Structure formats: C-alpha cells, structure tokens
Image 1 (tube, rainbow, N blue to C red):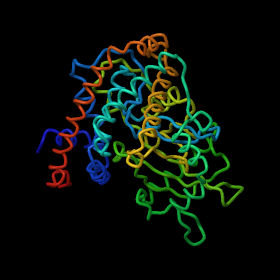
Image 2 (cartoon, rainbow, N blue to C red; image 1 turned 90 degrees about the vertical axis):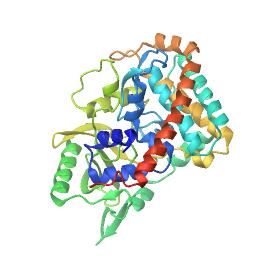
Image 3 (cartoon, rainbow, N blue to C red; image 1 turned 180 degrees about the vertical axis):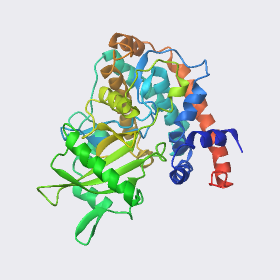
Length: 402
C-alpha cells in the first residue's frame, strides 16, 4: 500500500462508500481527473513548502482548475461564463489560488496531449492576463455581449439550448407523468422514506426562499452524481412542475456542503460561518458578478446544503476538442485569467481580504512569476508520479471495499 493511496483512503473515509468507488473510477481516467479529485493533497503538499512567493490575501474558489469554469444563467436569465464551483472556497494567499490553476494547465495539457511548450506559453499568458486585469483595478464579467472568439460562440450556443432538451435527457414519461429518469447515468434511486423527507424539505424551501419558484410543486427526486472531487457527498436533483402550466418544469440541485479540504492547511484566520453552506454561498456571491439562478443555502437533517437551479446552459469548454486550435485555447485561457482577477477585485476588502490597491500593486509586480511557474511545473510532475502510483494500486484492487 502506497503513501498516496493511504492519503486518499483517509480523506474519503467519511463519504458515501458506493459513491467513493465511482470517484476512484473517475479519477482513473487520466492524470488531470486525478488532479481534480485530489485538491486536499495539493494543499497538503503546498503547506510545508517555502518556495511559494508571498502574496496578498484574497477570496479564493480553493479548487481552481481548467474545468472549474462554465456557463450558467443568472437570476436575470442572462448567460454568463465564470468560475462555477466554490465548495473549497476560503480566504487564502493569492499565489495559492493561482498556483493550482497554473499546475492544472501543465497537468491538463499533458493529459490532452498538448505539448509542454504550449502549456508553458499558456501558463505565461494566464499570468499576464491576470496581472493586467489586477493592474487595471476593474472587475470584468463575460456574457454574450462582452465575450470574444470561441467563448462568445460557446455562450451563444449555450443561450440557445432549451429546457426541453434537458428534460428529455434527464426525465421520462411513465403512465402519463413526467419523472426523473433512473436510466440516466448520473441518477440513482432514493430509499422511499428519505425521498419523502427530501420532497417535503424542498417544498418548504420553495415557500421560504425570497426569490424562489413559488408557483412550482415538487414532483420527483433522485440522487445525483456530478463532478469528480465532489463525488461521494450527498447530492440530489428535484423535478418541479409549474402549477399553472403542466408542461413547464424546473430541475433543482441540492448539494451537501462539507468543510473546505483546504482548511486544515492554511493558518489564515477565517470568518465564523453559520454553516458550511453559508460559507460557500457568501464567497460565491461576492466573487461572481452574478450568481446562478435560485442559489441559496439550506439545512436538511442537520446537514448544510447549497441549492441552485439546474439549467440547459451549464457546460464547460472541452480542451480535448480544441487542442489543435491555438487561437481558441489562447482566448479561453485569457478569459479564465481575467475572471479570476476580476473575482478577486470584486471581493477585495471583505472580511480580511486585501484591498484593491494591494491587488493592483501585486499585479504590477512580476517578480513572483518565475518562482510560481517553477513550482507549478515541478508539482505537475509530482501529480503524474502520484497518478501512476494510484493507478498501480487501483488496478491491483486496493481501493475495492472489503
């Protein structure tokens, strides 16, 4: 049994056992999916190092990587491209956040069979666009009106996707009634008693939330599998039907919020949140220009959850598809960097984060770039080594339950 496998077993011990097996399966796809599922290992390895440059404190998503961006509709029903997962979010040094996404460029590009030279160019481009945005001192949002190139095309395509398509994909008609499809690869049946409690809880949430779908009724619920790092937590999808239109539906996601896996490895004093869901909600709302529709926090059976509408517009840029299109990759990396800097500016001066003037000065200072690049590229090699050992243990059956 290897050290890396011991660390994985220890971290995932408190998660749903059957789902953890699916998590290991997802992590086995390539080194990048392994990297996505091991945020805790990244920060555990980072914490003792003395090579990371000093940097201002910022509100961080915590698990920033190439696939932690996507499209979504806000409460104003406009489509945005932004960071979209804040489960690990905390107050952290800026270089911790930036080092993880730069590492993800090196790991991801290698997994997508994009050259090391190209990865280094894109890493440098990311740092330049990030710092240029900080120096400008103004937060920017990306929607179809402001997007360029492939990101603009991507958002326009997502905006035209219809709810009907999502319903056809996720639901089925049984005896004249639309229900969540348990044939869908990411849907699982829920025990009858728990399902009844969940539906009751969602019905109460609809009544209590300020801008909720008050004219909708909950008609079905299922367990939902999504992501990589978050596989193993409790997560549910609900089907809601409009009271005044039997053909109008909504899908709502309810995701368990656990403590950030980064928390044990930072000495930065954090605010005291009422629940972990309130932490996720507060940081997401202050970092994003506009948050996804119906975003809110709730408590079910003494456990905190984050609730948001599932939408036909949710999607990610697939780097494996555009790996030979240099200009498209360049546009996406540039926009990702702009969004990170914008989120930090937008949330500056809040509960301990650096003020905008400090971030502007940090963006003007390029002396830390090479040290961060060296760390990220070196750690990417460690990820590849850890993944190789993980696969050896995985194929030997080490992760199978007794």
